[in-house]
Amino acid sequence: MIAQLRGEVWEAGANWVVLGCGGVGYDVHVPPSVAIQIRPGDRLNLSVRMIVREDDWSLYGFESAGERHAFDLLREIKGCGPKTCLALIGHLGSHGVARAISMQDTRTLAGAQGVGPRLAERICAELKDKAGELGAGAVLGRPVGTEGGEVVSALVALGYRRQEAEVAERASGEGTLEERVKAALRSLQK
Image (cartoon, rainbow, N blue to C red; front, top):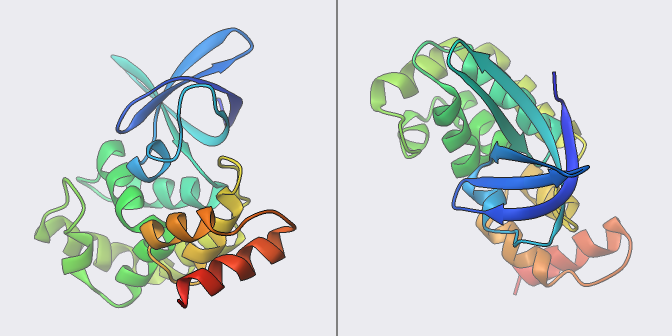
């Protein structure tokens, strides 16, 4: 199985990338939150889940191993296919999904594309005991996204929305991870 890909972005769309690794282009489904950060020519590391079906082999890529773990847990829910899981993670991030489940917030979960009220209730009911595991994956997962992805992952783990974190990451400047996170936090407080 393929677990991680590192290479150059050859093409990118709203929820997919073609990642060139060793002369081979891999078509990888990614959350929109990843896709908006990248452009052709960027270097990218993705934590990947390969799903093999009778008529399809697909790759799903994530910024961190924690997001991939959340994807795996969500896939265990009946009616929650890979694209729905990807939409949930792209919409809320793994920490946001964990928070919504722990608070039994079905309305927030139903805000993701492909998730209706019934599926949101099923996710909350079946994963309520694993919400901490989802959140821990967001905090402890090793960031492997584009450069600066560590800052976005850290801010999301602290409870900020992914869109806010991405804007703040741009203002984080240079330096160690700790210095960049502090700069991003300062920009969020303005």
